[in-house]
Length: 140
Image (cartoon, rainbow, N blue to C red):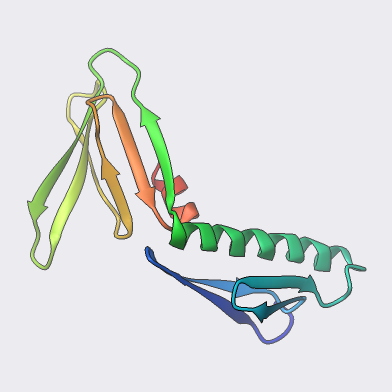
């Protein structure tokens, strides 16, 4: 960012997300229901237009994330491929682990990061849910 960085904070029933806003972009709230995103340069520079679109998408994803959340469904395909969730009591809080049997000699154990919920409706399907789109896609 070329100027003083600022951010937009989006609150909802699933959590709170702070979206960084580039100095080329102006965000205004004309009323309680809408946000107005515009380029400070009037859309004349390529960077201004690019950052306007990127910021608009980030804010739209944050609003959807804190209100509805994001979900990715994965399906395991292969002979003997299985998935399950194990819950163990940790030192400070319960720890969930995704256990995958994918044809290796040992099972893969992946800890579930905070802010992500993973469920296994069947042995071959995995559902990943969270309010941060990028984090859900990284886990999936």
